[in-house]
Length: 306
Ligand code: CAA
Image (tube, rainbow, N blue to C red; front, side, top):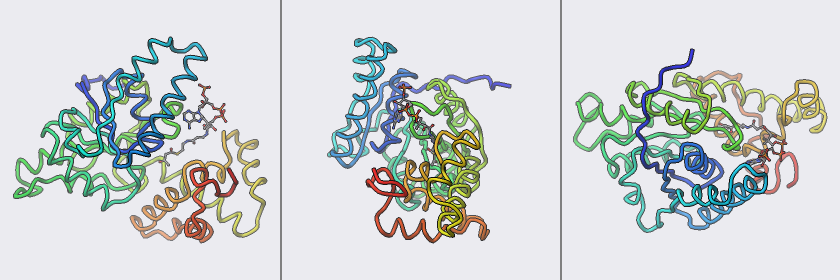
């Protein structure tokens, strides 16, 4: 049964990271939820690329008659870039920030500690992490001089939540919602309401390594890589088996390339380290391909050449 929605109350959203995920989140927020977005990335080159993708996708929607030129201009006008030199201070007035940087716990903890210090105390701090513990991230936002059990410490951690979008964000209909041990019900429901306003279906997962999505997907992709490594079948036969036999839109090796082999490895390691279960051991071939810098589609080479 659909949950009764509380209003999300997001009048302005911050998006941190202008990679594929951050850009997609900025676009659906501006287009579907019609919320003004402040986009920040420390790399101006990444921002340029991200905005190029936004323009390309809006042009496609106009050409297909899904948006008028004026509507596309309005959507584009809702996405504003925070000048690099402003840093996180440029996000000070947002009601929620969605962080979409790479899958690295110390990096996310440092970012969240800084965001918590810069943003209003009632602003929601959401992460698009695909596998890292929300509870660990929430523990990093306790203000100096407070502890996890003081009122201010608890209030700060209560506003951290997982909003896990899927790639390509404008196409995939799901958002996985993850609550840290510390997340308040109000934060969770406002984040759910925002994802719904972005026209996404929402599923909920507990804070376990990989949540539901990647605890199921990554071992499948890893197993496909092990099949290739052992010479059980060729790349094309593995992918064609799953595409035509199971109606998957992409074969597992193609999908691993699409997600990024470094991301797949980072998630698989989180599953392995977080559970201690040998069934999650990353395929050696996956490790070696990342060592070689063959990261899939984004680097021009993975299981396929691009
Ligand atoms: N960004 C935005 N839109 C994109 C896109 C991108 N990178 N790539 C494709 N699209 C859009 C196209 O523009 C097209 O849109 P329209 O229908 O509006 O024209 C639509 O997707 C279909 O594209 P194509 O016809 O070119 O290609 P396709 O039919 O082969 O579909 C696909 C492409 C949607 C990516 C499809 O292959 C697919 O669904 N693949 C599986 C993707 C998937 O599993 N994603 C989840 C990965 S896991 C994850 O993200 C989370 C994690 O934690 C790791």
